[in-house]
Length: 79
Image (cartoon, rainbow, N blue to C red; front, side):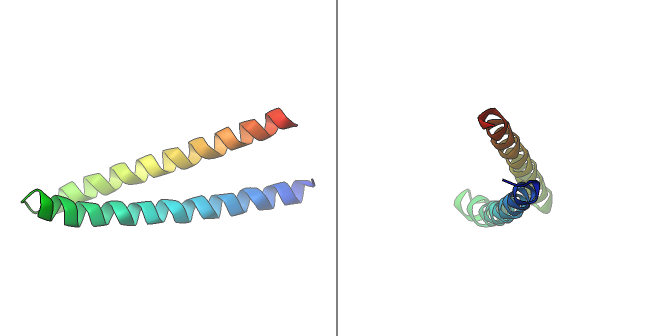
């Protein structure tokens, strides 16, 4: 395959994983607001929600980077 096709696939992969990360952040925010606030019997403070969202964002981007690195490594092994 050409270099352009490889770069285009990598760009599409980045966009897809970024959207997936955004959905994960929205789910974590919903869980922090609803599940922690209602199920456990206390309202989560703004600081707690921000901490949970920050942890989720960090985990999501680390997962994204790790996934892309492993994928690129596997592609390099195949060539």
